Image (cartoon, rainbow, N blue to C red; front, side, top):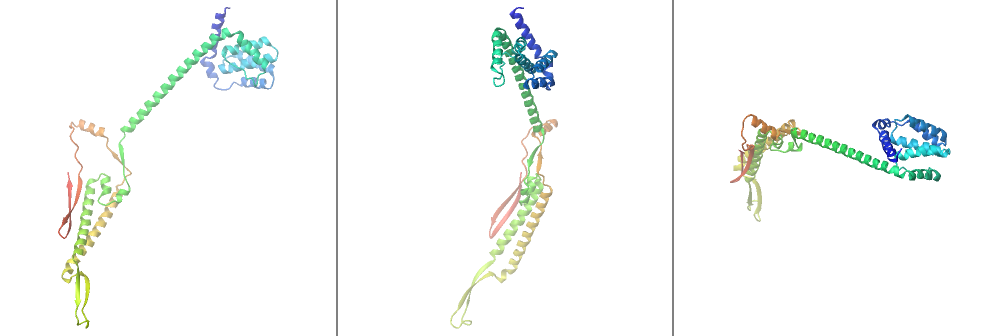
Length: 334
């Protein structure tokens, strides 16, 4: 048989040994391989050689297991002085892996020299095998790269689908719990209940401004008068002192303003408490906002044309200075 024919047979044998069936069988450890390894490590070289040869003859082995069995068989035959048998197994090992090396910490120098001599003698035959292994490894790497790229593309597709799904869900707006305790309908406006917000804001503003105006009007009636006592009370000289208060002729008006102040103040706090309770009852941690696309699609379905958005109704509270006090003006802006 010519050298080229031998090389072709070796390459064919490598492809057969690396077939998928052998790869599948390597999923679990081979019990006979474990026994061969144990026999070899304990120096039972005859049993290791016999067990390795029998397991190799049965076939259906992964390439790594086959390399290990040929190594144990070749070294065992070498230690038993069976040089032809040792050369046969070590040459088969090199046909599987031309760059395989023995561990110098485990294998004696004589066995390593014997192994390297075999490699040197068959160097011309090992080069095509080495080239074929390089091509096979390259094809394997390319296949792995394709699988990795495919897995990454699938992962990106799933991520985009998840983002699209989340984007299609109704959006939520977070609500502040503390804002429910702010006066002037702040909790109602946060919840989107504009009408109730306007009612509470206007009522509290009117009561608060009324109470402030009554307070200022009552204080405006307070006068400071200077009183002088003549010599009828103090024989030597007169005595002067200052009296601050409300004059008798303004007492009725002052009482009215004081009652208005307390009544409007009490009404403010009652309205504030009702507004807080109402806001707490209707409070939700998150309000679902309608999607823009959904609104536009509904508008197209009903045959509506795009128009400028209607501005929201906003309450308007204005403090107006008046002569002798202040006033308030409540309105709604459109």
